[in-house]
Image 1 (tube, helix red, strand yellow):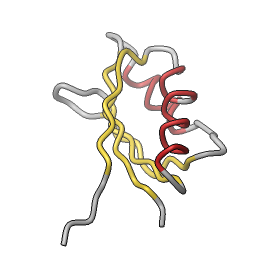
Image 2 (tube, one colour; image 1 turned 90 degrees about the horizontal axis):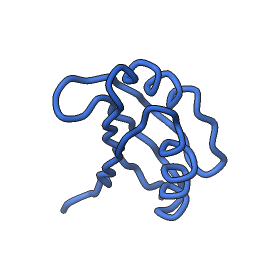
Image 3 (spheres, rainbow, N blue to C red; image 1 turned 90 degrees about the vertical axis):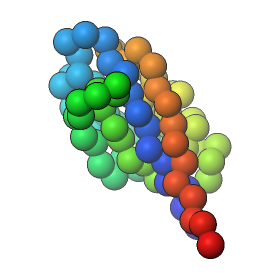
Length: 83
């Protein structure tokens, strides 16, 4: 079963659009980007990703998203099934 997560990105001032575009174009062998939204509020970009397991998801975030120019900080929220 795939692991799904939401990556909440705080971008440097003036970099939100570029960060969103770079994440959308991101090609990582460990995970798939399923959606990218530029948003208002405490975060600038929210990304939904899927991977085969938690380690692969983490690798895609640390090796991929966190290396994009303009990304200041990320917070990852894992999707869980309750019940």
